[in-house]
Length: 132
Length: 99
Image 1 (tube, chains in turn brown, red):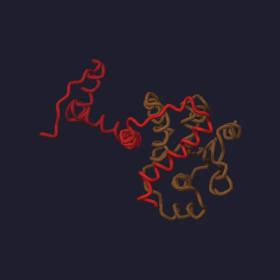
Image 2 (tube, chains in turn blue, green):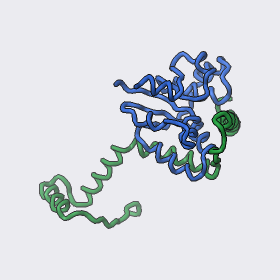
Image 3 (spheres, rainbow over the protein chains, first blue to last red):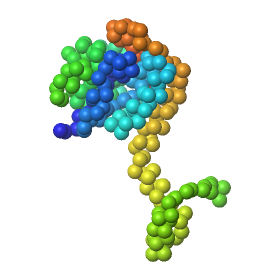
Image 4 (cartoon, one colour):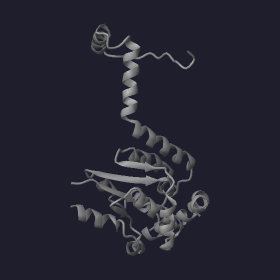
């Protein structure tokens, strides 16, 4: 299997810590690379119990997770602003294109599917079905 | 010499004996050099992981104490809350960069 690059939206991590997501099945896939950034990590920390935070950092220690700290190029930010994405979504969409992901995995981004052409937007169920 | 620190390490005898061969063969000047080179190699090998953990620890430190127990919320409520968090973070951390 070729390497798959993806970004998991913050809702996937939050659902995972509330036993409502199959996120681990994705992490366990071979040849997978998962990108995270400042925004996603902070959103998750602010929406999981304090005693889960240590488990979150332990999850991210897995070498399959890559932390991106670079500022996104202005041209990408402008591109997604023009597509009328909401504030923070612009940063996430720019990150997806910047690291050239194949998939953006989210449970709540139906509106993105129509607007984003550079990568596919799926929810976990759809993604796991596809790689099966 | 103030940037050098002495440390005591415990090693299996076999490893020490084998290290002595490396010194006798002239590959290393002394035992300290073998340890130094070994640690440098490990750091180089794990450079990406060390860098990642440095970044993550910074983000986690800055968000310390901001957790929230969402276990009693429905999926829709969690998504709504996350939307609010994303908007807040935009105002706090990103607006001045990308706004």
